[in-house]
Length: 175
Image (cartoon, rainbow, N blue to C red; front, side, top):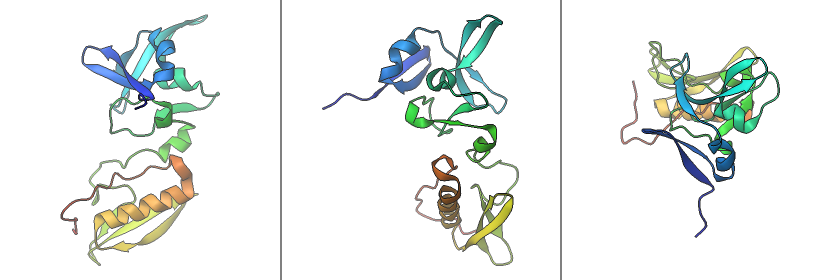
């Protein structure tokens, strides 16, 4: 059996980060720590010396070396610290907005692009593309609407599109 293409790097007594095995030697040459951004999401950083002084560098930027104006973000936010290259996306700040999960401010659905229509007692899926809202249809179950959003997001925004984490449940939510 072949060994895994990734490994864990211990960065704190209680924290570890998943990286590609091929990056282990280069990453191990630095001291890494976990910090939390303004959104509360954990990120892995190190300090590097430059001619202008010391600055923080994220593990994603260290691994991917993006060109000017681009950032590196993990594809899956809800999971552990996963900095394997297959899980990292290099994109602009505007492109990143498509990757973010739904804001959790008193909405009828837990999914992005889904809302409950009281008048019809159905879940409506919609998406915004190039500034225009598109209705994707009305569905009996919330998860059906979320899957419709996921399909449209992949169609319009490609592989970097945010995907609602729809899991099969025994009793789908109707209202």
